[in-house]
Image 1: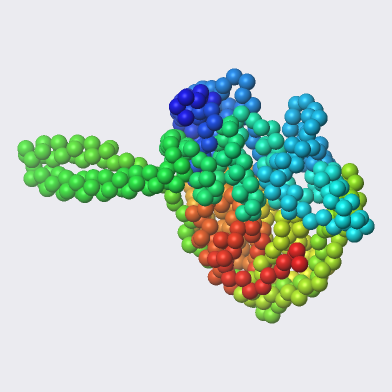
Image 2: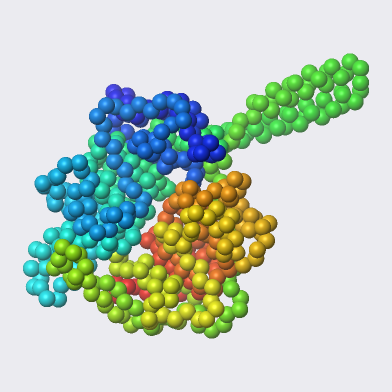
Length: 515
């Protein structure tokens, strides 16, 4: 886009948190109007920090950030603010604008279509005729309270709240996390047709390749950004070629350095004038050492791991004979809750060791709520055997205490309280160095996910309950996680909207909430 003006320019921008964790070191890059850019980098590298700097919610330590005058910028929050829970959908979207939008209803319908939300809603209206139910459907949907939606649906409402603003710069952080294939297709079409600037953080390679014009690559080790032009797959190929070239160069230099060191040591032992030759060779070796390049380490994946299953349990671990799920009437009034009904369903689930259950059904049908009630022991129709240790992975990470350090969080669940063991498990999930002393709340969402998996390994549970365990996780880690879950010897209940991930895991039973 050579003829388009530059709308974002970073000029020698540096940023660090509390003078302890450098994120950016004299970073410079620019983004042109209408560009569709992927922001890449390892979990915790600082991608979300760059969004904060562009939004103005964070200020650089040094350097300048230039934005074109009068630009509008929008981004989607990761978690629904508590103060929004009592708003209706219509009120929620009105809050996205500084002034009242009088024709907001059709705009709401349009963005909800993009995030594939309305199409997933099941409308149950036994007291209305079919025609009355259809005519009232859109109106009642916009009058539902935000708190009446599942966590995954709320995430899609947050995404829609950015899209509805039609901003000059749209910043999207993992927008496909709570979308199924149809939802990703809708969003992709929207982004391809969107004429303004988009910067996206995502681990979904196919999604990125559908609309990307270039990549900003943030190196977690150098704190620098490299800028690439081209579609996502082309850029990844370029980076792989460069890594291979860097490795070859370093291998050749290492060979020459060792040969020179051998000669240097030989001449140094001869004494006399030979020592001067050895000194010159030492200088040459030092120069060659400096020529070696730092090969990027972003492509590091977590180690293969095993979640040990609790050994002292026999017989049934989890039994489910009935469960409840919500039913929404299309005639729901403005409070969005009055016509909320509970439907009791019978089930015949009896999980023993090595039994893996998949909980399926569309977003909003109550999968996360059901998992939570099982984990907390509040579901009347479910029974967990006494003394069973439950490992519960929540997609919002609310099982983690955000005030704990990583080390405190890991020790709080570890069955074996040996620091060497805890640190070794943590290292397998790329949790090393000063990161173990960081607050959970200061970690990126991807890093929180890795801490949650490390906790499951240390906990050695008899029952695993997993709610969307691939959200926020780097796509390179996902096959390793799938293999660990596939070989887990305890009982497991899984919810996942990623069919490719589920396909890699042995599933013995399926409980379809829609049926």
